[in-house]
Length: 638
Image 1 (tube, rainbow, N blue to C red):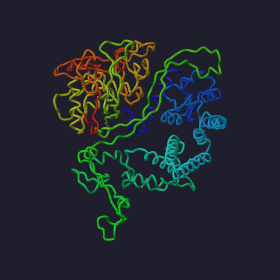
Image 2: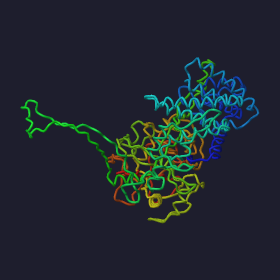
Image 3: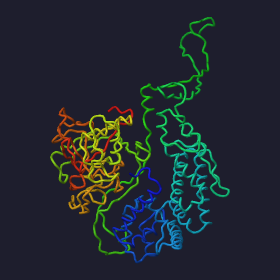
Image 4: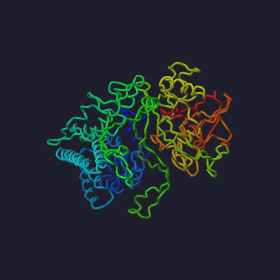
């Protein structure tokens, strides 16, 4: 699992990433990673500049290999950023060449490079400023304090912009940028705790599922001598209006969750009772208006004693209007858990020429073709089901949508039972970010039985974070039933249409990664290939969920390979007369064969396609079969 990691776990994950990168190539690549970690934004030209200045013994291919590796993400045209955790881990290390003195040398070179870029349009003024700050913090205490002063001044300027007409959005965006830069430089600015705390507050304001301690919100932060920062009053007022400020020194995550239980810090408090919770009526607003009468101007004027046409009068009236929702809708909203934002990386496989960044510098150099993964940072929404203090189940909120289900004619290795392709509209639903793990399985085994018994430890390949396998369809259904009783939410197996919709994540290619698959991003039989993709590693077992740290555009992991996943549907030999609304396609035969999706560690890549499907009896258990759960959102009509 990747959500909610401790600092030590994040450091260990970053260390593993760096080790994988170095092991794939050669030890000299590590030195390039260290030198490239200091800038906040990387360009091919800058990486080449660093290598030529400090690491001429490192092969030129390392420049491209680094930028296209999992250590970096593309953030613009020929602009890259190293992963924040990887950068923090590397900058705390030393090596034979990457000493403290070398860090200062790189910082000085970077400042010169920033001056050079100032005359070009490749980076924005803000990006250039961030690059300069990242370098200055390594030059000495005076330069570091200057960085803090400049960041504080930028925060103050952004607050002033927010007071201008139309400037609020720009102000919030700038404050978010400054908070992110400060967080990135956290290690180097550790002596300026007040600035780090203020940046953390600004970031937390953006998270709608968090109640903030009043002490943090109302505090004046002394970030440097003579430099004071407070949260803008408009932001404080907004937090109060949304009941996101609580008394005390600590925050509470999951504001809406607190509402469901009507706790002491819940925004439901007084007036109309709804069950256990009390709903606070909205504040009355005063509305003043003038009344008048319409008279016929062509009619004879009224005499003073003519009561048929009363004299035109003006009157000022004060009214208040309150709209109350239906009780059922209100209760539904109160019971709905709060979603939180999570970050993830997507990946797309692209065919590239090695060394293409240096063709301008080295004309005529021999190039080769390879498949590379282009990664991109994204955000999604999820509900985190807390099973224990240490164990969670992460459910990704998927938007509803319409897609073409099945393999299109002409897709390589298309089977007749994968068609005909047809349009399906899927309502919104939640789906497990990962396949169910063995740790999650053991927890649910300990819950009261609903229908059938569940084996306590069925998996062949042991590991808490490996997917549970060797479980039947009936046992997967029992898992959902017990979890539903325990949580009060309706967990179930996804329909086959939901599964393919979730897997594709609005793509139309054979895999959500693109036209082919590699064992760098999925676990399958790497001895086989798909299309013109490369051969790879055959691991001969399962991997931990999320092992490859790359998701589809919805934020779902391991949708291709690792284990086949049970769906709710009964098997049909094709899609003739299949439902078009996303619901499971079932018959009255309780023993009918069931559908499997996704492929597995032992199967070829053709079996891991988004449209690929397989069949098995509901009582079968196999070390290639697992499952992931879906859940109906609160208020769903499904």
